[in-house]
Each structure stands twice: as structure tokens, then as C-alpha cells.
Length: 491
Image 1 (cartoon, helix red, strand yellow):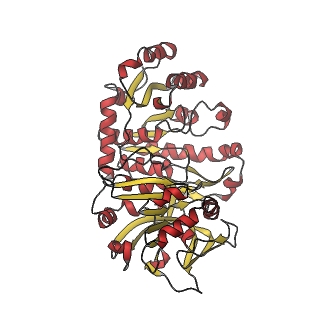
Image 2 (image 1 turned 90 degrees about the vertical axis):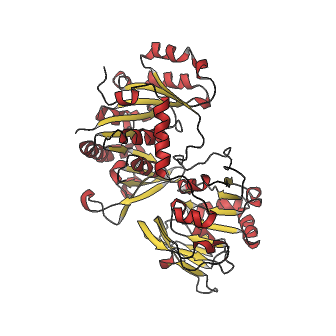
Image 3 (image 1 turned 45 degrees about the vertical axis):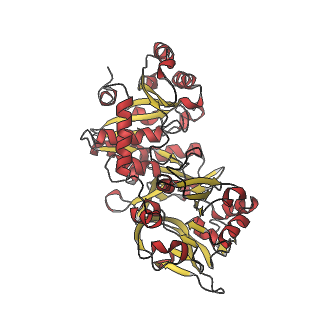
């Protein structure tokens, strides 16, 4: 194994691990190094489809990894693949997650108790990491949550067990905007075993607002107590252009320039793949907001029903909030509605579930469709073309687009109703007769520059420019020599 390993740990979830790993991947790649990201276990309903088969021994046309690792691979200028996130947990209920191992759903692991699972999957995790180390100069590793979750230490397969296995140079990042950052850093360090403390090479203060000189003497006091320096103070930066790991866009972030289009994204409990809407947030004149009540829909130009990990459950929640009536009224006024994957299924007349996968129930009735849930899951990257569209979405007519599918259901025309317009082959896209309601199975539409230009006459920043901006940011704000020094043995 030849790769040097740099690992980002956090004092809490949301401290900035994914963001920093992405920036590090591009920074090291710009040094002419061959780089790969790695996260042993990710819990997220934001997933991407990467190639399967062949050399990796993965069955089927594709496999799932966490969206964060997908973007990290692109930042590293590497081909995303399942070894970069060997274990993905996709929450379906508060107490149950679907387990995806090396890109494929594993029903046996999904039924296994949490602590019993680690012994089964650790050999797979270690093998994936070892293979990436053998093929790269640098592997940038992301931890999960906090390494000081001492109730999980014995079953850990994602934090310090990985750090020790890789002999990783670790950074510990904290969100200083939350308050208590120095207590978080010191408390995390104090709860680690001595062997693990020795792997920590520096503290990173993230999301800082104000005069950095006012931090003194805390960084020095912390170093005196732990022998670990603070190596970076990263200013608050809302407009970096990268999706948050869980796809959550900040509600305080306003549109760039004068707001021309307000888009309300329905935020049901099992929402998935929200990262695909980040390009909309980057388009000048577009404002995104959450819709959790009818009032949130009232002033919107568009309503988007995004993907869902539990379509029938989220549809029931939507009805309980009165959002079904608000969306119907919005559509009845001729305003735009878009459903993506689970959102498409909700727009139809009915959900039929003979295998107990998701649940039966009536849809919103805005498209004359029926969704039948099948046991086999469709996971694949897809190239498709729009046919002739009408009304609101006419600008998409004839566009060839690329994206990905992750779904169980198959959606078809309701036999007893006037037909809708099938605007994408193989049941991938449907439109109502009025032309303002569109449903598609294809995730990732707004990452296609042609779609953004057709709908808004504008373009979002390219991913490459976003990644370069992240690398420039950490290059400016880390202490000189720290990033290169992480690749050398600890003095």
C-alpha cells in the first residue's frame, strides 16, 4: 500500500467534514497527485449511481454511494466508484435503514442489529480502503459524526478504527458558529484513547465570523493542554456552491440579484437526493425555500416534490400538513409543479404495493398514472431525451439529458383515465394536458447545463470551478505548509 492517508474527523455532525474532504481532494489533486476519497460508512438518503460490474465484481448496471463521496471523487479528478463508500445506510424509518454494501442493497444486513453488523462488514471496509491505498498517492478519508461517541466505540468501523488501520494524519474540525467550539475540541480529544490522540495533527475552526484575533488566547491554551495546534480558522462562507452533505440549503441564503423565480421544495420527513437542486440555488435570480406548510407554497412560482425514501409515508405527512390541497390549488392556477422520482409517484392517482416495499395509497391525482412497487430496485445511470412538451415546460422539448435512477416503482398510464403525455421514453417522464405539471424519474436534471439554460437562460457555476474555489479557500486559510505536511510522517 503506497497512499498517504489524510482523515477529517468532526466534533459533531455538521461540523464541516464533507466540505473539507472535498476541498482537500481538489487541493491534493492540483499538486499532481493521484487522489481518492473514502468514507467507510455514510448514513444519508442522498445517493448517486456509479458504474458497477467487471473489475469490482459488482452485479448489475450500477451501484449506490453517498452523494458526498461522489462529489469528493469528482473533486479528486477520480472516477466515482463503490469502494469509496463501501457501506451506505439509507434511513426508511426512525429505527430502520436500508443497508447498501458495495453499491448493492443487502437485505440480510438490513435486518441485522446495528452492533452485530460491524463484525460482518469490517473486512469489506478494510479491503476497499486497502485497495484504494494501493492504487493512489493520497486517500482523503471522512469520518462520521464524532469519534468521541464512546457508546459506539466497540462497534466503530468509520472513525478511529479506520484512522488506525490507515495510520492517517487526522484533522479535527468543529463548527465555531454553534458556540462551545473549544469545549467540543477538548472534550473530543479527552475522550479518545492515547493511541488515537497521537493521530490528531491539527484542529480546524470552521464557519468563523468576526475578528480572528479575538480567539486568543484560546488556541494557545488548547495546544498547551493537548499538544495539538489549531492549523486553520475558516471564515463563514455561504456561497461556496457545494451541496450540503444532506442536501440542506440554508434558508437564510438569498438569491443572487433580483429574485425572478421562487421555487418551493416540499420538505417531507424522508426526503432524498436534495443535493441535485444545488445548481438551482446557484442560478442568478432563483430563490429556493422549504415548503412545510400551505403558506410556504402560496407565493411560489414552482413547487417541486423531490425524491423520497418512503413515498407513501411522506405522502401521508404531506396530507396531514394540508399541503395536498395547497399543491392542487397551485397547479389549478396553472403554476408549475415538478415531481422527481418519488415526487412523480405522488403526482399520480395511486400507489400499489403487492410486496410490502413502500405502502399502498392514493396519490395527489395531478397526473393520470399508477405506480406499482416492484421487488427489484432500479439503480442505473441513464441518458434520455425529452419529446415534445407543452406549456410551462416547453423549453425542454427535444433536449437530451443525463441523470440517474434509484427507485423500486414502475409508473404507467391509468387504464381508466384520459391519457397524460408521456414525454420521456420508457415511462421516465409524464406531463399533464394543461402543460404545467411534469413528473420525471430521472434525478440530476438541474446538473445538466442545457436544462438550466433552457429554463432560465442562465448557467450555474461548473462543478470544476466550485472545486477549485474550495481548494483556493483552504490554501488561503490553512497555516502555511500544513496541507503538504500532513503527507509526511508525524515528527
